[in-house]
Image 1 (cartoon, rainbow, N blue to C red):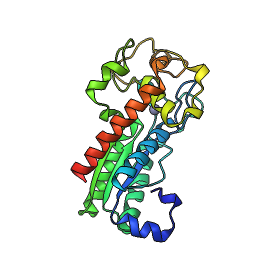
Image 2 (cartoon, helix red, strand yellow; image 1 turned 60 degrees about the horizontal axis):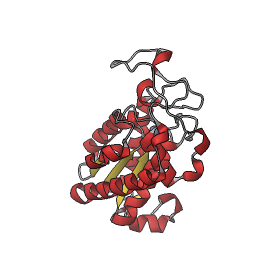
Image 3 (cartoon, protein in one colour; image 1 turned 45 degrees about the horizontal axis):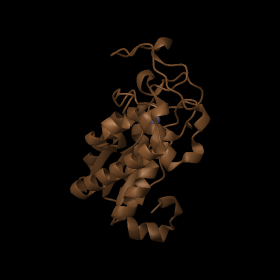
Length: 246
Ligand SMILES: [Zn+2]
């Protein structure tokens, strides 16, 4: 199911009949306990699970994304956070869609793991639609598929802060403990929070809107058990979306 592990003949025979899944991530700080690649690792994990259930094909993930913003990812000041200009990201996605189309791909699932990518993925698909009128595409943020009913359980004791603030915190830590526990520095998991979270953007960002650790909320509430529940329910939800829309 992984395009990079197929031969060209296997790819040729599969691409026309499959939902093509493009995981979209970033290279972005995720606190002292999670690696820079979290936003690509998680949607790749979901992409594999979904592909198994729908006989899909998974493209190599985008491991860079749009610019990390201070109140949703810590912003640009952390070493390692390496981001693309919007124009670069739009064209990166558009190039991949165009060439996959040339090979026969018609159904696309863009599976996003990085909050800041959404508008640029939308623009890429909009531009693609102008020339490829027989395609169908869906853009899915994995966190938007967490069932409402699961929120009280996942955030018990901590409270739900909203998805933009949930960075390097409960859900990402939990899902990483399930998908890639070997990458989680378990002795470095902490809770943190910005001194203030303004409801506007400022450039350059003031330091007091970003916690020094890069953890924007309470990561210690993350567990592997929560990760397993999140992964199973979100996978089911994405499979339903694919069946309904693609
Ligand atoms: Zn993230």
